[in-house]
Image (tube, rainbow, N blue to C red; front, side):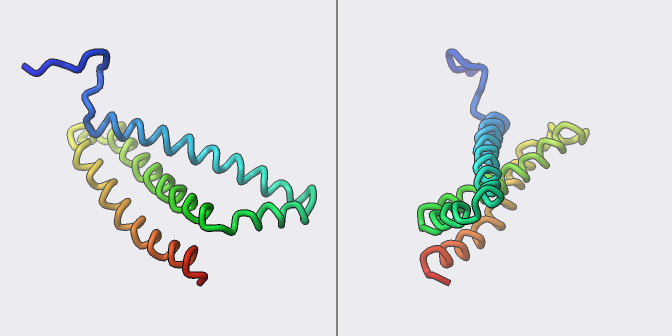
Length: 126
């Protein structure tokens, strides 16, 4: 009989890793939205300050951060749908591994073309 790891209840299966990734992506998306609301609110205070802040976002570092943001949003959305299925579909818990693979496949299918196109825009000047 395999022994469980000392000091933890978790075994590292897809349920645990999706739980961790869901929390990390959720916190990242929250902080993005917080910054987005604050910088957008500048337009009412000072349109010049707003334009200056938006101008600082037009660089490759922010372009790479946008790639991470889109990846986080896609994973968080599809994993959230997976969680709904696990919670409310009678066969969900038995098919958790298949659902996680489905999330990964859909994420890759949507994310890879975005990354290619977006990085062409960021570094190619299109």
